[in-house]
Length: 141
Length: 141
Length: 141
Length: 141
View 1 (cartoon, each protein chain N blue to C red):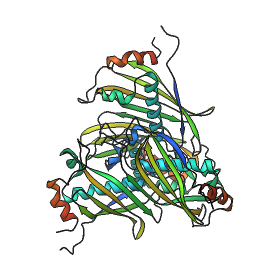
View 2 (spheres, chains in turn blue, yellow, purple, green):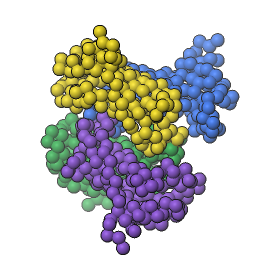
View 3 (tube, rainbow over the protein chains, first blue to last red):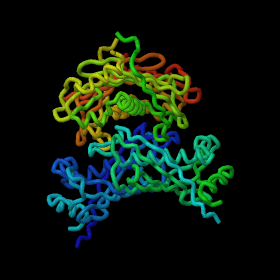
View 4 (cartoon, one colour):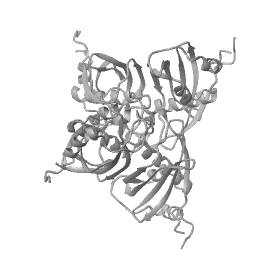
């Protein structure tokens, strides 16, 4: 049993002007795109680039998303977005996310993702070739 | 005690090409924008247009969002998005959402919203002038 | 020679909160999505739904876009977006656009679109089956 | 008279999944957001961060945009977006843009921007304190 915990991946994201709304802050929907960007990067760091997953006939669909907002992000900010695999199952996984600006926690969130065949669009088991890298990233080794 | 239940508001939304992604379906982040659009409409129908709320010095911030995706929406679809007030409190409220295409339920979701002063950006109580219409919309009369 | 002029298509679009930015107005990139929405509608009215075009093996790619902004659109506005075919050629066409709020002209624009095969992604001639409806829509009959 | 030419600023942008559409490529509207991001960076490098411009009571409004698309960008790509001041005038300026993926030119574009007071929202002259840095960036020194 591992005591290491899951592999964490953090990226810097510069707030885009278009991401703000008339309240003056980043509109809450944009965090979903940020989550996707860091999830993409984690897959690269794990050794399983997501474009390659799709090329080999699989999709990792988002079936649920949740975000909790604590402090706003603003134009001019560079925020740090972190993700890790919170739960790994045979047919999907759950990613957790944190958005920070330096020491300030701005938001937390999670996505539920399931494997589907890109032709059938039916749920399936995690492709064998990605099992080992994802289990390692989840801290299960 | 009311047995009426909350006022429901439904709008038709035509899927935009830009809302699709390379999987061929509507990208999951767009549902957040759809929720906002029907929430805006509910406020109008309740008699409290949101632009007026902001003009009178208040904001109704989104502090949490959750979406559960069941079936994809596609370019060419017109979907029906419904909202209602699920919980009304002195300092905020929770809206529930459903996205349907005809008889097919595509997604469900919720947002938590809190009142803040538009100058102070501090949490505050629901403005008195909107209390009655929102309580009625929540089915509490 | 026709003196009728091209067929015009106008839709109402309700400004979305997410479309605003910290200046308080609609961010200029959103007009591109509005153009696409009315172009989609024109194709439907012409009798050539764009989803059907893609299903029959063609794409109508945007190869250039231009927008000129005169007055801002704001949250709470319903704007009228109009399009028509400004030029029709064997391998593509040019759509013109106007955005109005009542009598006020907010923006004008245009897109250049070319036909490509959806497999080859190579430029091709306009599919024969859509030639007649598009020529009629362009006012060339 | 300078023979140096304008200061060029280039940033790397990683394509986001949400930026793709059902054609499989980046949707054309997203280039507008990329232009804004590199324009923001140029202002920083010039010594005039745009957030500071707004804080001192001015906005630099986009009054026109044009983009010409040559080759698509795809998920998995990192693109290089470059901008420079193409024309500097007392009341506004024109930025030019190029989007490349390595040696391949994907798109070119331009925006027209004008100075307005953030309170009045009326056109005005370029604020004196930014004149020198922008003239230098435009290669006029």
